[in-house]
Length: 262
Image 1: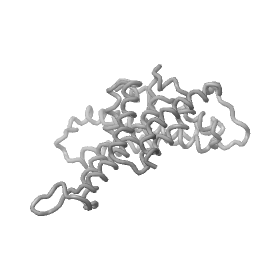
Image 2 (image 1 turned 90 degrees about the vertical axis):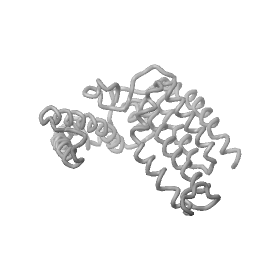
Image 3 (image 1 turned 180 degrees about the vertical axis):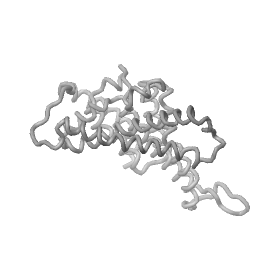
Image 4 (image 1 turned 135 degrees about the vertical axis):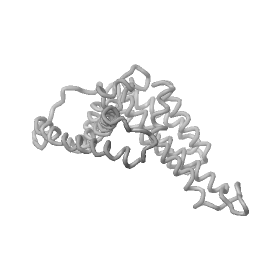
């Protein structure tokens, strides 16, 4: 959503830039992304998934800066904690690794399974983050339309991708407003009494935005069956093939340890 000071102005995930990842064709990135993400679901050792995740993290750091590695971690850390503590008790096969008072808490199978799930979830999150951070929402929609996705489906994706950061901006604005007006928004307050008024205000703001969304859809001719046009366009198709080949080479380099084992 841009820098912290831009939250009230830029309500989307895209971060403008001139990095090598920004310059690649949006359609090429959307084509190769499923191939890279498929590597996380192939049966492979944890060290292979670690390589996948490390390469994607390195790409994000080189293209967007090392500080951009924190947002995806902050977004999914609760899920990572749940995977860390809830996976090993259900996989007790293999050699015991950790025993307390004669009770086996962690085995080699549980450790491998936990690492695989952690790296899969984190790698997939970083992969999607690299795409939505370097491809504007307009280019994503235009690329999907270029692939033949119906306009109604693209519109649903557009509204969803725009509403997530918009609600986040609204949450921060409402929270700050409650702090200024009440002066009682402290960490030591119970969670229910602290966040319930903020959540209620955010829901009211979201409901009030429904008529504006309906009028916007009507003004853009949603529901009409005549051919649609667009003010913006994608790159020429001549730029698509070299970008696809370059990204496919990167994907093949990532997947070769798994493909060789197969």
